[in-house]
Length: 80
Image (tube, rainbow, N blue to C red; front, side):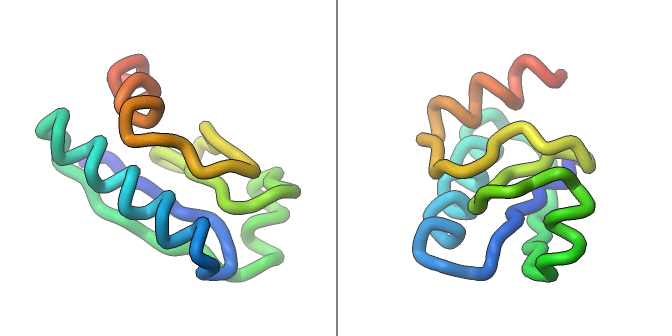
């Protein structure tokens, strides 16, 4: 199971990134769980200075932008 973490304060961009990450995982048939990380200290500890960000299994793969489901699918495929 992949752990998809959305790092951010819950703004519209964070919500959109969550939807795109879920869509990408579903399209690839990946078993996943979504965790929303809103604590700024935790986000900074993960090395993120610009949100929204996406971490997969604890590793930050996107930061400071909302990527399309297609971009996220490419990242997920490369992690398999």
